[in-house]
Image 1: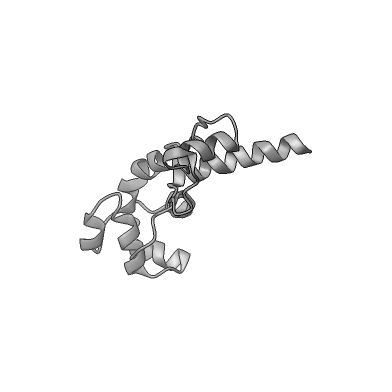
Image 2 (image 1 turned 120 degrees about the vertical axis):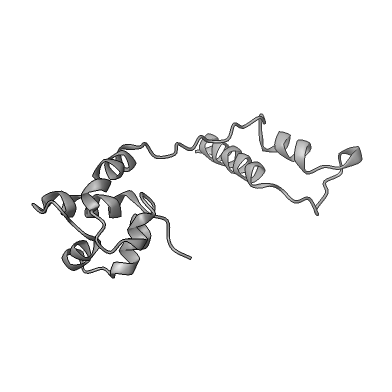
Length: 129
């Protein structure tokens, strides 16, 4: 399985393509200037145009606009999960008790519940300092 393409890699490729004064810049030219296997570069650049894999003489200057828009696209923003609990005790009562308010030691918590618990514990630690 191939790694996901990153903005850092694309910036590196883009600067080399732009610095070149050639009107027709191929994957083999890029491979020689970077020192990365040509087949690997073809697989990565196929993200922008699948023809890069097939055509030996594909002009990478045609991909410059697509690469620039990929770099300028903002990263995914991750929001913290909202804590709906007043305290750790409130969390335990709502998520880890069974009928009759007995603590169920076999309760499995989801990732969001664990994140909420982590936030609550951090708040409690800050209060004690």
